[in-house]
Length: 396
Ligand SMILES: NC(=O)c1ccc[n+]([C@@H]2O[C@H](COP(=O)([O-])OP(=O)(O)OC[C@H]3O[C@@H](n4cnc5c(N)ncnc54)[C@H](OP(=O)(O)O)[C@@H]3O)[C@@H](O)[C@H]2O)c1
Image 1: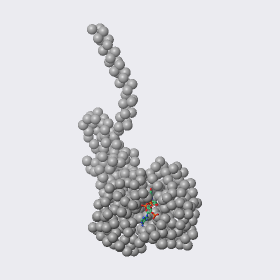
Image 2: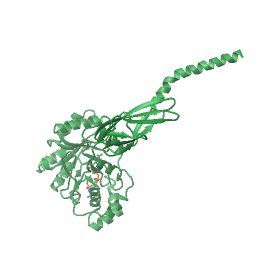
Image 3: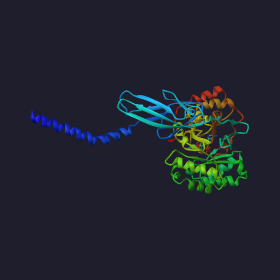
Image 4: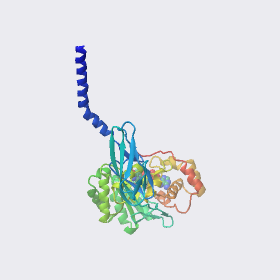
């Protein structure tokens, strides 16, 4: 009996010791699995969420670490700006910033978290002017609806392609640090004889430049040598992208850059990014073609007053044959006496998407400008919309 008591005492001491020793690691595990506040799956526990005046969002509480019967209380500290109902439905009433306190309680544990909500005024979706072939950006500048993409055009081929495009009335040119052709684009622009103010040049900073963005912007200006950049984009989300964007905001103030925007940003990325910056992007450039249509992303971006521009409009090199040979598109093209490429580009325009097809072939460059003398019917738009396969042709 004595022996049993001794063993029991030892066991209890051991268990007690394990309890003490393992407590910190248990706490660490709990910390990892803390309560979080989400809206549309984005964690806003420590970040600011941005919503449009007049809209409602539901605060999703992930209270994984709080076990047992839970009670959740929501409280707004500026209810005139954001009011929140008992079940976590937050309503944006007025422009401004409000703080919401969410308390999760059980018999054993209580946890209070804060969420900041910035309410912005609703904006008008950008409107395409088909007569002038331009759209007004939220920065106040006008931008052409169709342009020339220069990805994979280098050296003399790039200079010649841009010159041919400018000769044929194209006034929008898309380049990037990553394409290694900013010098050639700048040369063709300078030597074109077209007034600088009539040409709109887009370039992009690459993620490996985001840690020293001021230098990256000045280097791009030097390589292009065209006085200013019409529109500067971040090429992809990446480390220090907010820092790089803030440097672009500064460059706008200094007159080095007229407008700024993003590329390869989708709904979730925009919801996280926008509350952290001051200037709403003027444009978002994403992959868009009949086999990858982004039908949920496009209206979302447009509802923020941001212009959408599509890359790989013809599917991208290596994929154009299938897309241009698509039976539905070819049939529609025949009806209008147009090429498949023209039908795809026009479909984009009618969806409110600016097009920048890439080409080094003067005939194609010419063809890609003739998009305004025909119109696709509602039925034809629907037929092309039905071709969506959610098939991305590049990794980002
Ligand atoms: N932001 C990003 O991450 C990103 C990514 C990729 C691309 N981009 C931008 O988007 C632009 C467009 O993409 P892309 O140039 O790679 O692909 P794309 O425009 O979808 O396709 C270009 C291909 O289509 C052919 N083509 C052009 N017009 C044609 C026509 N009328 N009829 C038949 N074929 C025609 C071109 O050949 P020919 O030379 O023989 O005409 C070329 O092989 C790029 O140049 C770049 O500026 C941005």
